[in-house]
Length: 246
Picture 1: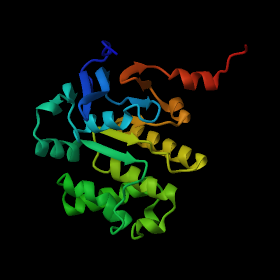
Picture 2: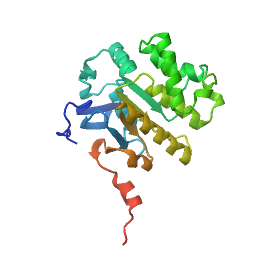
Picture 3: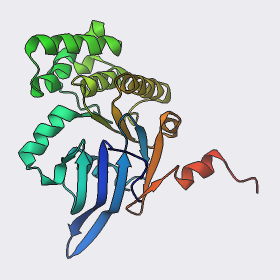
Picture 4: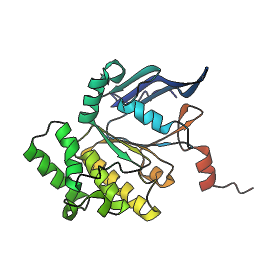
C-alpha cells in the first residue's frame, strides 16, 4: 500500500516496512513492504484476522520492536535510528497505550496507575496529581482514585487504562483490541469514551480490533492480509454486513 500523497507532514510515516522472524532454517515475513502516511488527529482502525500481524505492527510503531527493513517516523523522529534507550524515552513522552488485558499494576491504586506515565514523562508531583485527578474525572472515576484494580469491573479497569494512556497528552495513542475482554455494551461505552477524549485533544489514534463497531468511528480503515496493508474494510467483514442477495 503506497503512502497517501494527500497527507502533508503526517504524524506517522511508514516507508517499505518489513518484519520477518526466523523459524528454524526459514524466515517468515509477518509484514511486507508496508507504507502508510497518517495525518495528525486521525482516528484509524486496523483490522485483520488473528495472526495477521496487527500487534506486530503496533509494536513497531511504538518502537518496542524494530523492523527488519524500512523506516518508521513519528512527528519527524526516525525511530529506526534511535537506540533502545532513546526509543523508550520517546515512547514515554509521546505514546499512550490501551491494551485488551488492561495491563494495570495490581499493587497500585487507580490514581497511582494514572500518575505513573506522568512521572515517567517528567511531570512535577503537583502537576501530575492535578492531571491525574482531571483525567479520572473525565472518565467517570473520580470517586475510585484510592481503589485497587481488582476492586473494579472490567469496564472500569479499561476506563482507567484509557485515562492512563491520555494522561500525559501523547501525540499518538495505540489501542490493541481495547474491547476484547469486555461485553458488547461495555465495549461500546469504552470506544465512545476513547474517541470522545482523543477528539477533544486532537490526539491521533490507531485501534487494532476485530470489533466492527469501531469502523463507524474511524476516519480511515486499514486492514492487514497476507502481511500486506490495504485501505478499506476487509472483504470478509463487508460480506458479513452486506450479504449477497443471490
